[in-house]
Image 1 (cartoon, rainbow, N blue to C red):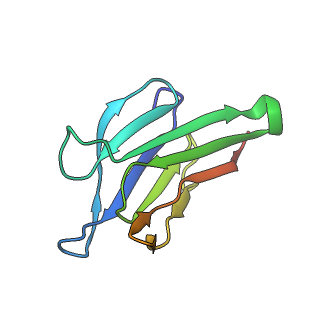
Image 2 (spheres, one colour):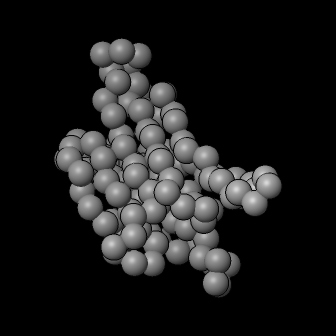
Length: 112
């Protein structure tokens, strides 16, 4: 990302049940990117690392899934060796024929 952070996603491939690295489909600007799992024409997850330092003295991490596949997000700040933020989504839940995977919102992912 242009803000200096690095973000990545791994997903649990439903065919192999192995964790696999997602690929970046599109860079949307300084703070966000879209990732895909199998086909570059099929967006799966949006990830955004937002500077909230003026508001709460923290960088924020968000993800928004457009999938029912289990995934986890990792982010690394610039020039902070060994510092990593990660969040995993629980197994998708289902209710009355619907399957869902929830979004990630961390308003205090990294201190400023």
